[in-house]
Amino acid sequence: MENNQLLQTLARACDDKRAENIIAMDMHEVSLIADSFLICSGSNERQVQAIARAVREAADENGVEVKRMEGFDQARWILLDVGEVICHIFHKDERVYYNLERLWGDAPHIELAVNADAE
Image (cartoon, rainbow, N blue to C red; front, side, top):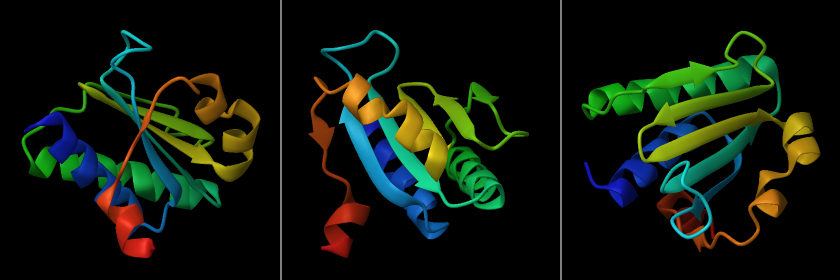
């Protein structure tokens, strides 16, 4: 599965669970960690876990391995390593605190179909 297609699929999975402020960042030029970051947030721990489950299921359904998932039990910041895409699912309070968008501010944003539908 191509990187952008995977990114859009995972973003739709987040959107299906009503994730808030879904953004994608192109990390090619600023980091060796991954090609893309997908960042979103949920309003409570149960929603954050539901979003993470949906992302894992979407990856599995498309034959893409989730290499690692961290932070699921605490559900304050769940990180899923989906190969070329790293998905960060935050509790809304943690998202404001860590502010990855500012930390990685040099990375250009990638337009997501879920955001285009909302406009």
